[in-house]
Image (cartoon, rainbow, N blue to C red; front, side, top):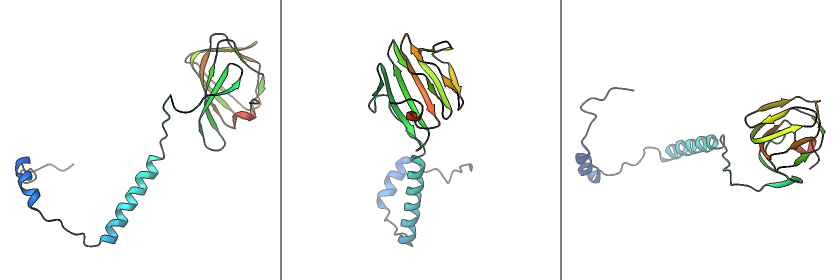
Amino acid sequence: MRKKSSLDVIPEATLGLLLPSLAPIAPRDPAALRQQVMARVQREAAHAQLIQTIPAGDGDWAELLPKVHGKRVYTDGVAESWLIRLDAGARAPAHDHPASEECIVLQGSVRYLGGSTLNAGDYEVVQPGFHHTELVSDTGALVFLRYAAPLNQYVAI
């Protein structure tokens, strides 16, 4: 950043008096100026599409299984991210993993029959070919899941 000199600073009161007396200046090449402005608008619009924010209250929760509700929050056409809400006593059937799955328990806990228990804050990644036993939530839970393939390839919904 260049250092300001005393010539760069015009008091606001002076600007307030000077600006109304200035006549607008037409651009030398209106077509080129328009093209520059439109290119910038397109760059900004493309950049804005790089971030997607979904407020917690947006979208509908669908009943995927009894006591299990889900909301798909993202897909790139293959992989999917879901928020899954399990009511106390919810069960999900045993299933195979055709692709990887990442899981973060946000609230509550879930356990696999004969296997591990995941509590709030726990992270798990499952690789393709793994077979999960039945999943149970005694307390209820909110879980973020990232599937490398569509959810319906893991569990019939």
